[in-house]
Structures are given as C-alpha cells and as structure tokens.
Amino acid sequence: MILALVLFAQVTPSDAVANYADCLSSRINADPAMIDPPADVAARLAIHDAALKLCAPKRKSARPEDAAMFDRVDASTRKVLEDPVSAEQVDGDLADAPKP
Image (tube, rainbow, N blue to C red; front, side):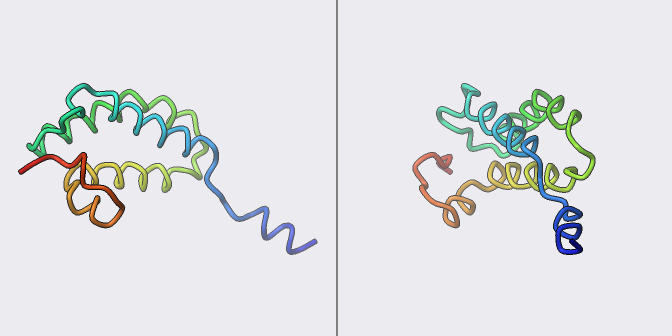
C-alpha cells in the first residue's frame, strides 16, 4: 500500500506536455522559412517565438506540476534552432541544417 502511494505521488508529465511539444514542432516545421532554414540565428529564433505564442494555450491549460517539463521542451527546441549543426551532430541527420 505504501509503495502504491509513493508511486502515485511521483509526478509524471501529462499528455499535455507531449501535445505541447507536438504543437511546437509542427508549428516550427510548418513555417515556410523552415523549408530552407535561415542561416541567421535571430530569424530562426523568431520562428521559435512565434510557435511559442501559438502553442501557449496548450501550456496554460495544463497541470502546474508540468511547468518544468514545458520549460525543458522550450529550451530543447530553442537549442536546436540556435545551433542546429551541433544538435544534429548529437541527434542525427545534417540534411536540414542551415548552410553557413
């Protein structure tokens, strides 16, 4: 019984975090500028900021316990757009990275 209470007390991310991450990803990828990602970091971050604004309602309607996970999603997507070459070297294909 105590184990069940301990497991129940552990906070796990809700589906809202996954939905929010999907929203950010789809909004960023749907931006026409991402067909050939801009070499300018500020331009890529503007795309990220626009996606944040569009996905904000998903974040606001979620549990307060998920705030840290939302922050991680935001930081991760921002990091990829700030330095896609570095992120792609860690995570995969360089085909979509902006050309310097």
